Amino acid sequence: MSHSEQMIENQFIQILSEKENQWTYRPDLKSEEALWQNFRGHLNRINLAVLEEQLLTDKEFKQVKVEFSRLTGTPFLASQWLRGENGVAQVLLEREDGKKVTLEAFRNKDISGGTSSYEVVHQVVPDASRVDRGDVSLLINGLPIIHIELKKEALVAEIRAELDSGLQVASDEKMIGIGFGENKSEIITEEWLKEHRALIAEIPSKEQRESYSNRFDSVEDYFLKVK
Image (cartoon, rainbow, N blue to C red; front, top):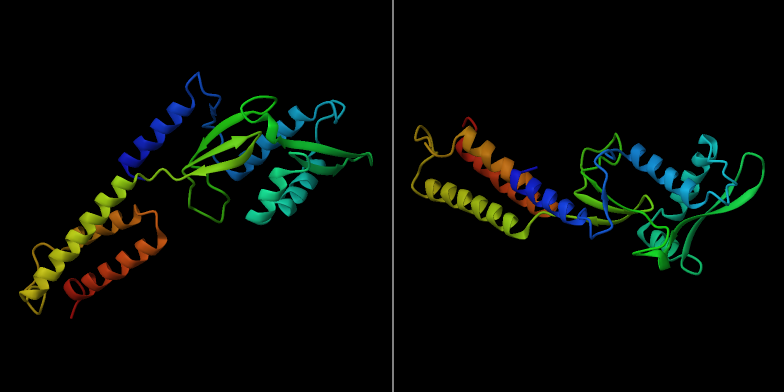
C-alpha cells in the first residue's frame, strides 16, 4: 500500500470514529477468525435472554457458522437474509440440550440506533489462502455490511499518467533505434522497470493491472532481455 493510500484510509477511519458518529474503530480485528469471534460476541449480547444467559458453546457456534454460510452463500442470498422476515435477519440453532432457538443477528429498524453496534475494521486478511486485504469494512453487530475501496481516483489517474509516460519513453527510444543490438538505453534499466511495476501493483482494477503488465513485459523483452 502506498503512503498516500494509507493516509486516505486513516483519515476516513478518523472521521468515522469521531464522537458525534457511532462507529468504533477495531484495530484488533485483522483476521477472519477474529471477525467470527467478534460476531459470536454480538450474537451472545443481542440474544442473552433467548439464550437464557447461557452463552453459545463452541459446538453451537460451529453450527451457527454453517447455517450462516448457507444463508449468505451468494450476494443474492445475503441480501435476502439481511432483509429478513419482518426486517429481522435470524439464524436458527439447536442447542446442545436439544432446545431450538432463533437468534437475531440484525434488525433493519435498529439502523442508527436500537441495540445495534457499529464497528470499523481495516485491512483484514479474509483467510490463510488469500493475501489480498480489504480496505475498510463497516460492521453492524459484527456483520460486514459495507466494504469501501478507498483508492482515490485522482491518485489512480496520476499512476496511470506516469505509466503512460513510461510507455511513451520506451516507444520514443525504440523509434530512434535505442535498445537494438549494442545501443542500450540509459533510461530503461532494471531499476526503471521495477519502479514502474510497483506502480502497476497500486492500480485497483485487475483488468488495468494486467493490461499495463503485458505492455511493460513487451518493454522488458525488447530493452532488457538478452537478444
